[in-house]
Image (cartoon, rainbow, N blue to C red; front, side):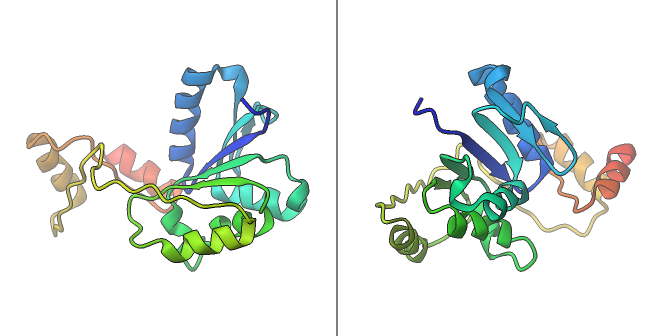
Length: 178
């Protein structure tokens, strides 16, 4: 609405792809693009869905000249990850002109982040908290094999089941097993 480009970031391509299709449905496919390490679709669109590393690389390359107005950074708890946290940190440091929306369902007290963002950007920062989750999470620790665990979850109507893999090869292998 303000004529600025908005970037939505997430840590994995599956989340980026899911958000891409959601936003295409909401705003029209001509207004939404996607960038990952593998491909780019409609990269000049006003709304871009990308992995966190893509936005971080844009921030490193273009700095305050980057064509980014807003950055919606999902799964912001990755900020503290020793291997990948840089991809959430760099945009905050290199893009102070950007309006950042940082989202995480697992962060606790963010008072220090709020104060630091206000100091860095010179703009007020607001924290929105909610104790109610739209989709409740159910955790359990099991020693059973994954396939057996999934069968049990489905039998007890605990779907959908979200399975995380750290490589594409392991995801493909699991998909074939299922």
